[in-house]
Image (cartoon, rainbow, N blue to C red):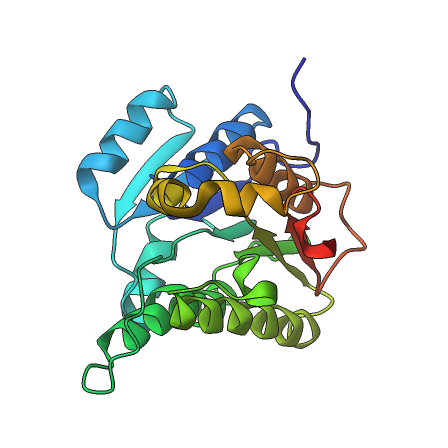
Length: 247
């Protein structure tokens, strides 16, 4: 029996990073809850594959974008074609940071793809949200904001910035928009496959539950934050890590 989430029937939700493992899992649950979903991703081919995997249908649409600036962020939300109930921002870049004093590009990409785009989307969202309800924004941070990720310093810094963005916007946008974040860690997706191959056992050893998480286990928290069961939750970053943050 699947988990059911109320309060989303017919409402418009935009999911960035929609072709990724967690993005697709979020879409599947939100579609099952009756939402209209717009998937945004940089990769058109992966978006097409995601649309097929999710069954297509009138509830689901797609938009290709890098979300590289404020204009593109606004275009992403306009692609929904109607006022938006919730923005679920899963898009991000997880790449090694060589700490090269002569090359700042890895840091710049991490900030742009994990933090700046979230700021631009949130600003654009406020003039495109569904004003008939209390709307929602759910950002994706990471366990790296708390523990740090070896070899990915810039990524860790950007994900810490997402937590600060969440806290500030939750106050700025109250009471009309609830703003929260999830901080998944050690979730088995294509994005984490290389890291798990390199040091999977070391990572698993600090997880009290003794296993990696699954995409649907992050998606269920996102779906809850978008549902009518989370009406008194804002400004929070919820760890989804099998207890690793406490170890």
